[in-house]
Length: 212
Image (tube, rainbow, N blue to C red; front, side):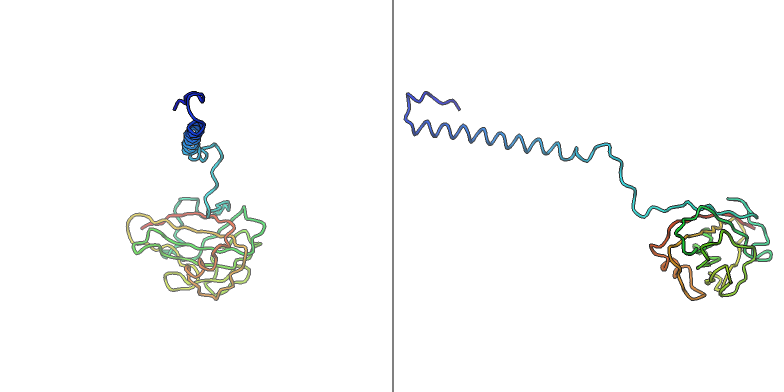
């Protein structure tokens, strides 16, 4: 809007014209600010800052091994239902200093009915770095831990016993905890996992195979 000379109009019209000009300029500035913010706010989240690590990420720093089979190899017959059906020797390292106890769970995710539990052992002393061959199937074993029930409805270890066909995988999973569970002997895998909750410091595993 172009204002004519104050000499040709009254003071009242001049004042109105000036206010109209100021209003239009103010309106344009507000629109400019809003438009700028619309483009800048989304861009603020597109910087090069590294993303945070996902919550609940598992620490797999424990190295688990066995002297009778290597990772992914066949488990010898002595440690299956076709042999002596005794537990294999296991060793581990890379344990957190704050570990208070271990839990060992062995299962078969390839079983026809779903994951089949072969061994549940908890409250393993924190100063151990392995288990001997043939852990007794008693409820509590001195300097070894407390035994839970497996899916054979038995206490202690029962080895691979798959149907004929493709070999199954058998996981031996070790968990380092910041507590002792103090559960009763015969606790199931589900009960042990529930008790572990957020107390897992680290874990590791070794996997063997067996087929008929």
